[in-house]
Length: 111
Image (cartoon, rainbow, N blue to C red; front, side):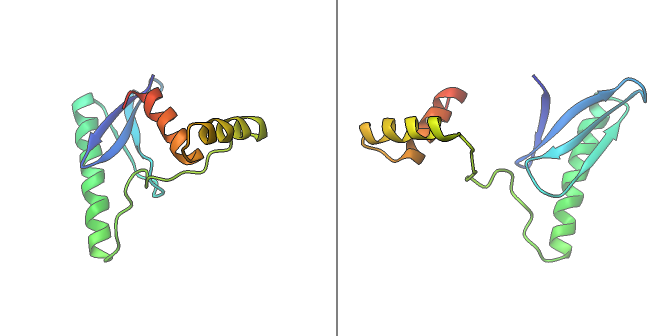
């Protein structure tokens, strides 16, 4: 399991480089590549927050909307057999395939 941090609705990874003796990470689930690094855990959290604040400030300065993590839709490749089985099960449950898959994911992640 990988560790993450959260700030202002953004999520960042927490990784270690023993060779370089640093902690580093990347903002997750958005297109812009935003990296940060520090020598301590507290420093990494601060670097992550500064990276988010800089990203939001850059977006405001350029008058563009910052990307939000996970827009709420995704394209999942299930393969023919699994897709068909999910579609049949959804039909039998009188729901859409989308709703059937949504419920399966909710159950899997505990929501």
